[in-house]
Image (cartoon, rainbow, N blue to C red; front, side, top):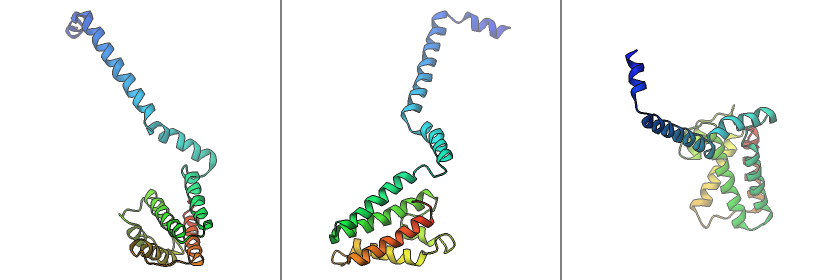
Length: 163
């Protein structure tokens, strides 16, 4: 009963002040939850995945892949090299999202097996071509070879159900 008397004896202006501060922080929390993507990730992504039977980010990955394929249509060697680098980066991003640790795609590929990725040897060869493109400015790449490399990446992304 003494605690109740102490609470009642707190001056009214302090009660109002604490109420205002509490409401300020409550509205601040609600504001920042709405501004950040946390609520969106928590609820919207799960709802979209449930209703569409596909992972949430698959549309973005498909659009990125289409952009990479369009790089081959320009027939210039620099565009085809860029398409291969982007395809390699996309595979790296997908494996990172899947939870494979590692700084580079090579480190992530070491953790995969033929069961997970049946064309793992081909992906290694494609990754080596990408490394040659990046590290050797004089590396030559034909359009046919570029198409084969992108087909390897496409098979890998299809097997991982990313596109």
